[in-house]
Each structure stands twice: as structure tokens, then as C-alpha cells.
Length: 522
Image: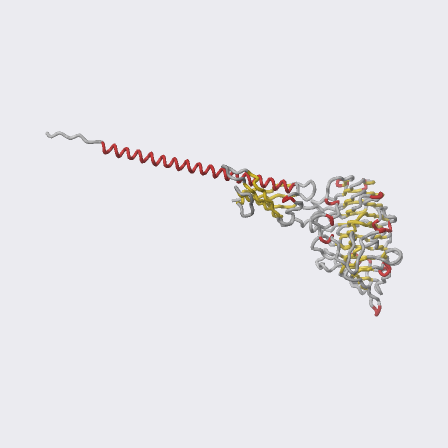
């Protein structure tokens, strides 16, 4: 029998060793790759986290700047036009990298500036009544005395001096939420219990509030508060020759109060001031007072026939109001008062003084119908700034008012547009069924209102109509976009977008910022 030869295991051991070495190599390689990837991921996460933190920090800095009204180092930024700010090297770099720089763009909301807030570019006059006098010489900001009950005002009431209600009362009937029927006086209120609603009446008011400022001094403000253009020529007065039924007046400068007082209106009694601007700077001898009596004065585009004598009831709507769909930037008039020129509505004859003027529409600011010059106008036909009697502090007589109405039982005065006479006094007297309405607000140095016991006070004497914007400023919306530039000393919109924030900024003091949304860029 032949025996079996033993086998050699050395080949199998080599194969096993190679397998083990291969497996170990693969595992080590995988572990090294994983470690490298993990390290790289950790670095990236650190960098991304730093970028995110820097974006959050930049947004917080921008929000605080808006709260202080110092975005981009200036007041009023991002209300109606875009702005931006750069925050250089403000966040430390990671892994020994240079610090990050951020860029924050701010875009205003589409509706910003469209409300009537005192600082809005297209502001209506905010308050129905704003008196700017500070009480020099003991002058009241608002003085009211009525024997026929409370005098109605529809809109905010703001006096930078006192409110003195001798009798009757002042009733603010404004009812449009979220606006409140505020009554505010920097000084004391005499008979404060006669000013309603009591819940919204504050006397000795000390808060910083743009509603109490001359809107023509605020930034931004409506351009219609700026001085008008210089007078291009002297205006002319039409005659009644040849059977003309009514009298026309063309725009321009007028230096004779007597010439305007002598207007007859021809056979209908109507004096039509054609659309345009009338610069009134009376220089003739004696009192510089234009008296409207026994005539029907209509300023602007008429809505009634001019060839027949109107009724008293027709006068308040005798011209195209700036709220009317037919109104344009050239449909109305503006009476510009210079020097010590005055307008008095009298009642020595029948029908008494009848006056209705309508302003044109305005693309920036309220439609101003009556304007008191704070500074002189030059040119070939210069016009003086308001001075003399109408600016005396206090006035030597109520007849120093730039507009004065006496206690005629027939007088009607309707001013469809803002009355802006910041240096002068306005005096209104009401009797029987007299109709006197100042629409779109009255901004003046001081206001006096008096009535007889028979005056009809069922309607507001001064108001801000519903077609005007709310007298309370609406909050402004801003959109912040944050870009981060790691390791760079400057940054712009070409950087990496990291964050978008929507904020709401209050328009009245104290200035507050509310974050409405906060989202990381994808």
C-alpha cells in the first residue's frame, strides 16, 4: 500500500494574510476619509454658523439704527426711498480668517408716505385745526365763545399755546378709526370740561409730537407748503361794459385793496376769480382790507351758471372741489397773502359777503387754497412777507385777522382746501344760518371763533374730509436684506445673501420698531 503524502498549508495562509491586509486597508482608508470629511464639515459648519451669526448681528444693528432714526447715519432714511449701510469688519473671522463685513439694504414699503402723517411727503394737514403761536403776549392759541352750544370740529385739534373756551364748548366729532379725535394743548385749557371728547383731550401737553410742528418745516414735507412761484404779472379786473352779466378777475399780483372791494359782479353780483394764483400785497392808502359785501365771489372752476344770481344755498358747492373727480392741478385758485393784506366778509348790504374758493389738486401735500407768506417773493412783481397788523403779538384788535368774518346772518364762507397762514390770526363769527366751513384743515398762528345765540352749529365749522388721508400717520414698512462678505473689509449686494427681515416702524413718538418676519435666505 502506498501511503498518502501530507499537504502544504502555506499557500492558504498567504491568501488569508492578503485578505486581512486588504480589509484593514479599506477600513483605514474609509476611516481616514470619514475623518477628513468630518473635519471639513466641521469647518464648514463653523463658517456657516459664523456667517449666520454675523447676519443676525447685522440685522440687529440695522433695526436699532431704524429705532433711533439713524439708519445709514441720517434721519428719515428708508421711509420713501431705498437706503443701505455697510458694517465693516464687525464680526470676528473663524479659523484665523479675517473678520466679516456685512451690507444691509433697506427698501421702503409701497405705501410709505401715503398717509397724512405730519412727516409724510404727501401729508394732508393732519389736524383739522393747528395753531402755531406759543402764547406770546398772552395770546390764546384757540379762543372760542359760543352762545349756541359747542362748536363742531371734525378732526384733530392741536394748539401750541392755550385753548380758552369761554362758553359753549368745542366738540371734536372725528370718527374714523384708527385715528382718534384728539384735542391737544401745549398750554393750559380754560374750561377744559367744555372740550370733548374728554377722554382724548390733553392740556399742558409736553410730548415731542410732529403734529404740533409747522408742517412746512418738517422733513420730508409736501411741496405745496413751499412758497409759491413769483407773480408773473399784475392781475386784471374785468368790466361790466357791454351787458356783461358777471365780472371776471385774472390771476396775478394785486396791490390795491380798494380795487377789489369795489367789485360789483355786474348784473348777477358774481365775481369769478379764474383758476390760478392771486398774490395779494395791498399798498394803497389806509387799511389794507379787501371787503367782500353784496357780492358772490367764486374762485376756481364754477359748477353753477354764472349768468344768473345764485342762491345762498348754492354757494358752498359753487366751484370744483379738489376732492371732485373733475378737479385737476389747474382747476382751482390760491390766494397768497403778503404784507398786512386782509380779507373781511361783511354784511352791510344784502346778501352780505358770499365767498367760495376751491383749490387745485396737489401731487405733493394738501390742496392749499389760502397761503400766508413767511418769506418775501422777488421778481419783477415782488410780494412782501406777511407783516404788520396781521402778525402783531397779540393783535391790537380782532380786525387784524388775515381773514375776518363778522356776525352777518347771511354770510357764507367755504374754503375747499387747506388754509395755511402760520404767521397770522384768523377770526370767525357765526350768526343764524350762516355757513362757514374751512375744509382740509386750518393751520394758523391763532384762531378766534365766536357765535351768537341763534347760530346754526349742526355741522362742523372746520374739518378734514374723508377723501383726505388719515390725520394719524400710518406705520411705515421696511424690508431689510443682509449680505455677508467673510474675510473682506467691504461688502455690497454682490455678497452672500443670508437674511431677510420685514419690520414696521411707528410714525409717531416714541419711535418703535416691530419685527414682522425673519427668514434666512435659501
